[in-house]
Amino acid sequence: MTSQIRHVTIDSADAHGLATFWSAVLGEPLHEDDRPGDEEALIEGAGLLFVTVPERKTVKNRVHLDLQPQDRTRDEEVDRLLALGATLVADHRRPDGTGWALLADPEGNEFCVERSAAERAG
Image (cartoon, rainbow, N blue to C red):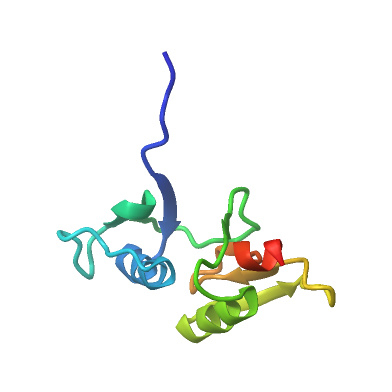
């Protein structure tokens, strides 16, 4: 017998607020029952569950998401995510087009943006 991952759970100061950011990033809606102020918020299509906890993030994530743009370049996606409220933590993009950008969501959780499949093929 094996196990299956049902959700990746992300602790947050404001579950609904952070889930709303990630909903915009991923183009996936929040669960229909989720409302501002709820202690939990779910992006079902992405398997991400956000829960409100009293502690603030204080150190580097031990697990993070790596995003691959589907309909734009890595650099265009970085610009879009910055406009949504992400911050650039470290830029590992190289002149030859390889590499990635390390960003943080509005609560400081790090994630990476890699090249799109089209960029990798080119």
